Length: 337
Image 1 (tube, one colour):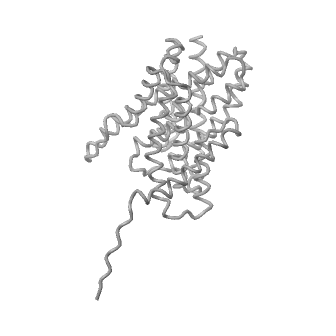
Image 2: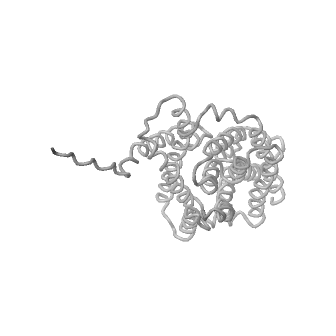
Image 3: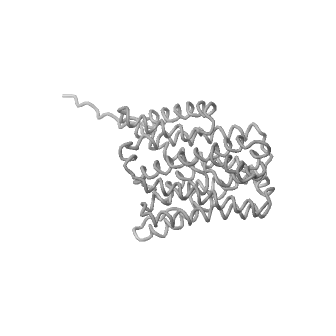
């Protein structure tokens, strides 16, 4: 009797491709849609697509290894490339007073949002993600904080909830902030600085700066990128905090996550080496593509029914955080100007 040889186990790398290919394909579509939907970033479009796919279709199990890989590793690669969009010379041109304001926005937004979350009784992990997203740079900051504080991906719905709140409040600010700036009689330059300090997503800042007009857009984007740079020290602090908590059970994450070091390396590269504009633009496209693919993958793991059941308190937290960050930004910009 001839015994059939046991079949070889499937190659792990091959198993990744179905989910990775789908995530990247959706990211390409999200990039295209973002070009015709003002104020909407490809990241937001991609995560909405992932949530809709997970809740209206039966996704094959073969996609899971690739989407899990995308949600973790493509996310971190995208954050590394995000550093190419930041030139330290542009940030220093803001002047010391405005840089102090940026630090105050991030630190005050973080601490204030944590306090609001505690007062409302919102889940601590969700509160932390909202604090990071609203104070720093929207969906990318939410996902980065989740990667540091939830390495086992046990609280993915909190991540998606925080990103959904970024969409809700940040999109509303595209219309609210220019109108408020007009009522206050702010000059376009000052209103642009306020938009960069107050609004969550880069794409939302661009939309608001364009709506204000004049010289608002350039200042808005530079201030926003200054907030993006704060991603590195905040993630380092969270990693140290997580490391101390994990010491008791033997889990000690890196002192500073590798993707944070990579982000800083890209910032230094952009600041020191005269990169051609085509390289910077290509890095921006690649960064957005990777982050959008990660957002889609993250969305595929979310139950919409459970997401809608989070209640009103996280929404109140998000509105409170938005008002807090916008107030700190306005007072700071008026002081620095």
